[in-house]
Image (cartoon, rainbow, N blue to C red; front, side, top):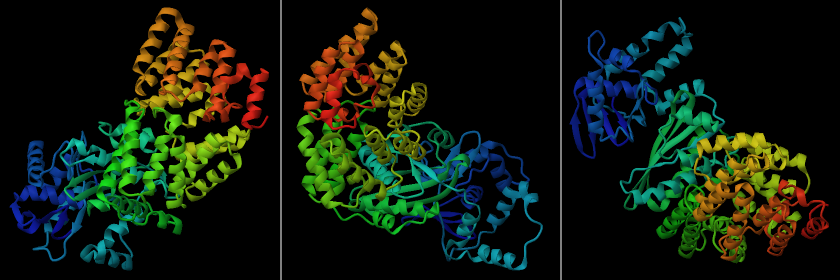
Length: 621
């Protein structure tokens, strides 16, 4: 950059040592300006203190304090918070980097001769690595790019030749910069929507929001996060809601080296909030050089207009639904359902709200779940009429047909359609794997689970297959790793409890059962089980658990008669187990479709009553 440039809303004029924004301008000390110019010339890169000192104060003896003061002055002028930086980030024990975006301004007040000299000083230590000479045409081309940089071709030239390959990424929770904690739901909903758009791009593995949710306030570095999630790149950014406007800042970072590959700010009308996420997803696809199919391009088209109340209610519902099982109880799923219902009332054509409402009605934490089944079916069918080419709609419809209607042919067709529309959706592969397991097609099911694991190794549903294959050690290993990332995921704790139980690790099983129950809002039951285990051991704890579950079922707080049957099976009380299994059959409970594959029922398989139950469900004998 050989003249003036923009940094976000700021115009920087190095030749005049001036920075301006919205009609007001400030003068910087020359050395402070040189620090900014040096950082801008290497935007997205981490520059060490030694590099900056050598570049700006070459040949002069100064201490680190002078650089620290210069950076502090820049932050003061740019109104930048060092704890939540938008422009200058401190990399502990390494140096500083400019977060950008930086845009060259044509017609600057004067050329900046400082940049070239400082760049030479910064890069001087590695000059010996450069080729001795360039061919005449190449040298002429590079000279042209350096001098004129038409359409930012220079940046694209270097990105094309040296950018790392990105096949997987994680979107970290977008920061809420609105200054109002009550707007956290808005930032969370926007994060979820961005992940939804990105996950529809073929050739790019995108980690689910349930796995990235826990990194909201993390102190971990980007390389640490990327290693834990197994991704090449990370998308991070912020959302700022200002009256009827919204600003989204996003940046793509190659995580292993913390190299910023792309950054952009978007200012939109609040009603166009979701279209911003579509635009960001398209830009990221371009940066990682994904060639979009016509179908993918169509899915990333700008969403239709909607009213503000519908959008607000929808994003609140998304936030409530994402809280379920992460340290929050069943009241969150109730509030999610109410929010999606409000969104639909405000905008009856809002297809995404119907999809999320159906997902909410199918959540086990929902009170009185049996009463919600007609509404779940209606929401799915309405979503299908509004969005017939949505993979999420076909996935929801397939799972309902599979687990509630026991319609094997229809459910298989819906799963295949969902995967046809979005072959890189790990949840769709897991759902299809469960169908295949229920049908006795175990080899095909394992392939689907492996595909899901390749797409997102962090999703807990993968371990269900290991449980059914009785690979308990492998499942425990994966679940414990997941809990390192998402310690407040109640479902993962309950899964781990089952693995421990069937490994004979009774104390560990009870402990995980208590943690999972408490996270789903059953704190009192968790305490009862713990006290019983201390007083009368494992069988005593199971007996108390069964009674508490029976009570929760009678009160409409538990839609799991099969779970009660499973506890009685562990206790060896077969008659009670079959009584509760018959109740599950009468309610067409989803667990019935897995009778043939769950290790829970091994003690019952030789009983004629069990074989008759399998026949009535319609499963392969």
